[in-house]
Length: 54
Image 1 (cartoon, rainbow, N blue to C red):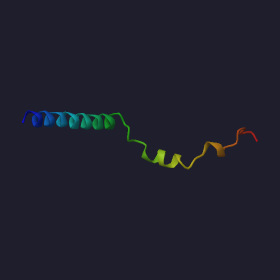
Image 2: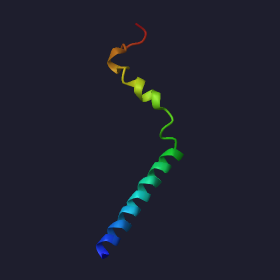
Image 3: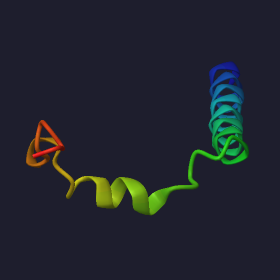
Image 4: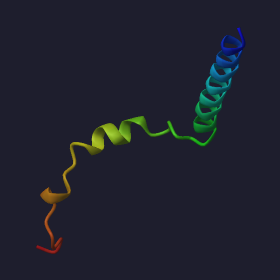
């Protein structure tokens, strides 16, 4: 019985920590530019010329 209560308390603490991390990431604008990363995969740095004057 003690182990069950201990495990429930641990799981609630871990769930609260995960929820806190999610809300922190929302507050610090981690999800603002969703399209930029999706489009950046199509841009290859090696396709650009080394000297832009030519």
